[in-house]
Length: 239
Image 1 (tube, rainbow, N blue to C red):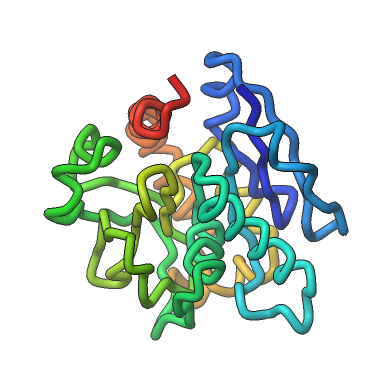
Image 2: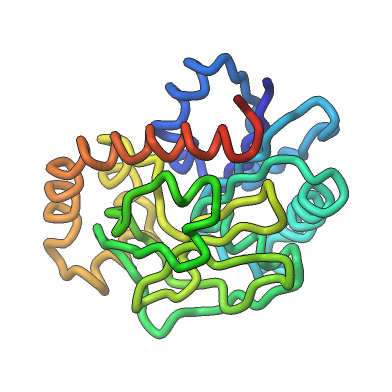
């Protein structure tokens, strides 16, 4: 099995999923869009993972590669119908690639929060294996505002009604982060855009408090990530 990973900043990578992919014998190649790299032929890959980033999906004029990336995602999901996993920006890019609205939130959502599965999740092969509510890490100021006709919303919370969705049978995306490691908050806090939203939501001492809370929750987050990966892999046919 081979995965193709789209990254938009070097600190947002597959995180804890890397060890799980190695255990499953999945190798991967990374495309750093923000560094001018372009994707290879999709034929050689079984999974597309699209990670987060500080940019917004509508910034094509400033970042023309966003147009190319969205076209690739559209082809992957619609034409090739291969497994897709999008996280944070990757969730928003899936919606935008399929001509659905993504826009700013009234206020950023940053911190450890909980999301609750929707009634539709009960019949979803991934989400029915995940205990609800789901404790997760959030760090975003934009949200998916509409979904494609063949999509279902799988998780929500009051701050963001479309926290997770499935498009068709094999494309999943999540606004929240599952791939958390001990380095996630310290590294992301050094990204200017992330630091600004963190301080706006959590205050001047937010970074240290967020890091401490995440460290304390890491066993739960790590166990959740492993359960998630097993369920996702089975749901999209990777195992």
